[in-house]
Length: 292
Image 1 (spheres, helix red, strand yellow):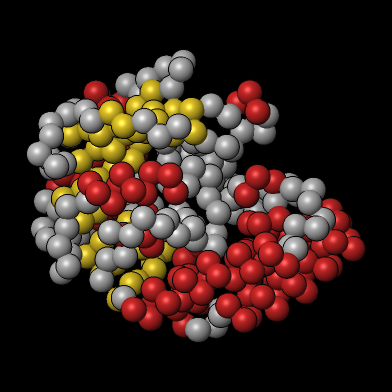
Image 2: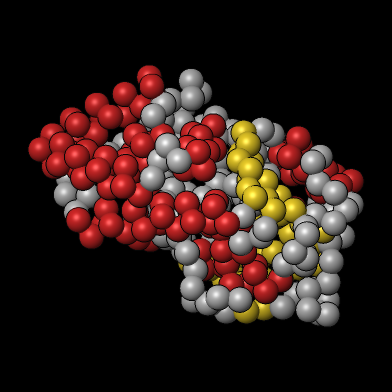
């Protein structure tokens, strides 16, 4: 497998970039398996595993629409470059006022390119919506955000995704995790990266104990091989739901550092857990790998 980890054009909190090598070496599927992601998010894991067949799903319609527009050819690297260069100049002149103009425009028109712009210009690359499903992340206060090198970086990320979509048979659908998991066959592989219970709470899509239990049941009932990302522990507490809900799974752990806190003191390391319903590399239970 390739050592390079490709980063997708849409940034998501808790993106699994640094965990991709461990996940890739722990996946158990063949070339005819369908890779199924009920919580697509950034798509970084599936985009790097590069399965021949895949279903990427998310309840966020804007993520799904962005990638479907790339698939249809309505968003191309050339179009992205032109758009971000133009909008970047307007942001540099208008600063926060222009950012909020684009945010209002997006909440009215839902243009996928505006979504990309907001994702890269907002505070800390967050994706957050209020109860009315309006994007409400504040400005990142970087008027010169879309410098030439940064735009080229995003354009190359879009180009890579476009190449993958020409090479493989991938679908992007907006639906619940239950519906997505129900599509899996015994030969397929399900990778789940749900909101981390007890840590990630969104304005429009909260995650609680019942959701965790429902997800576990859906995965077990699917009869497919599955892998789930969650948190194991940090310096202050542990994830008790691993023992409560996922005690029938194998566990692999790896330390990871998140850069999503507003203050440096809040940006702490956490030990991630990969939970599977199969044995990874012939080893039972925990395999502790450090990647600081």
